[in-house]
Length: 220
Image (cartoon, rainbow, N blue to C red; front, side, top):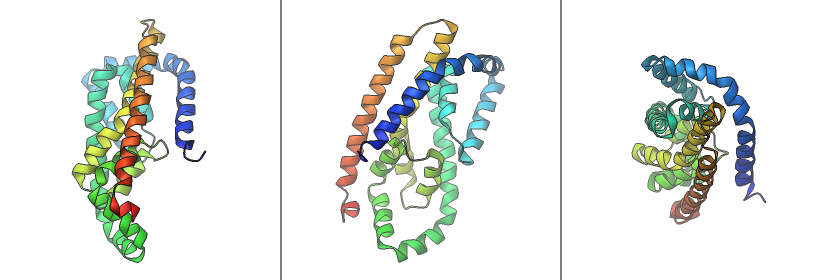
């Protein structure tokens, strides 16, 4: 049961999101229209609020919904992924300044040292698996991973791949909710995308777990 708890929580969260999305979109449309009508200034405002929220460890899921409603799955996805990776790298780099205390802890606790070694040698798979987990706070991970020896390249690549299913899901949910409120349809495509995204998340999770299990530093 414990092994399936993250999946159950993710499904419950998805159902709750779908139930609340349409009424929330109805109330948010005037504000979204205002941001959209502001042109480049509205985009700059969106980017600034997202950046500050991520660095301050505030929830970032609503921004994916808003990006999908404002710019569509493609435009919103491109903007959000570039913005997210840039802000994540800033937080990751800031955490590197605190590696001194972490190094002392690593010397005292062998298990922590093995985990740190696994992050260095198999960092991409570990980061990917952590990003796929619905229980791992997104912003906290930026700082926590910065304390380890995972390389910036593995951090960015694992973040990109591991975050992609959830990002695509919420982009499409935001775009679909806005379309249904505005009467432009798209409900069938919305559900198909949700199903495909869920399947891809399951496949990526299984692959990342297998890669992590093959790491000798983790199994040691």
